[in-house]
Image (cartoon, rainbow, N blue to C red):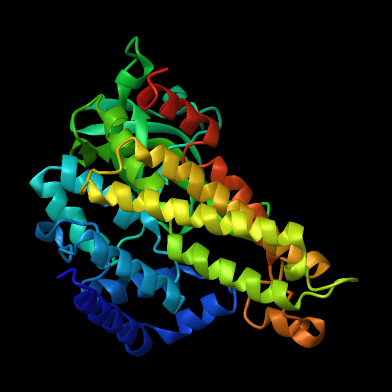
Length: 394
């Protein structure tokens, strides 16, 4: 199955499907740098689900395609080359593995099919105003009342929370002496009475974040994943999946091809920017970082479904710092033409710029977005502490 001929045939199959059956209007939006709406994400993932390709990493018994690590790599490469938008990870990549690993058969039957076919949009409720990198300091509380929990608290930096139907949360269910021992993993219907979702506009001007308030929200105990008090270990399992998701190697290679194409024609007093030694050195360093990231991801996948292990933190650091390096290169190329970012991302934004200059890219917006990548999902400093303890034994 993993012979060169078989992998080439599989790549052709995936490429043909994206050209023929995937929603072409969504590809056009991503090609022109437009912001995707809720319906775009749902249609994208529903199309993949109908083909059986929405969850490459899921076990076959839960709806995964049963691909090898090399097939997954081929699929992800073709996915990026087609220009398809990044899969919204909160359902397919974050909570689903928690459900099929720690959930009951009833929970698996209840939630997994809707996640697989994009019938329910999920959000992640981890960070709080006083609990970000120090997640164990969370204050959102769930008090047992018969067959329900009564939840009160406040989650913030909730990606696409304004689109979500459900949210999975870490909540405090006891005041155990060890802070992490009193945390449970709870799934909450965002249509429940007492839930309020408010928008947060990002530094780049876009609305992709939200904060979620819980005011005496009643949540059935059957919505808890795992035993009460086991939420911390569950969350660590989820975060390993989250941190490896950042890799997206082929997406970074495509971005670097764009950098090189723009650098080759970039005007400057002496020569194209791409011919200047200092800029060429930056590009070469970034290319090498992508190669190293690809090798690290391959090593993690060779270990099987749980192969990332301690490598997850290293992958997260390398992937996010490489993404920042790429947007820095684009920003240097775009200059002042990269500054507009508030009607950019809407249909036709580029047509409003003089001559539709090729350097009129939303470089500032992208630069701001990648600044946050080394903070959310576990800051780089936290990842280095994990590596020091778990890998180096310090």
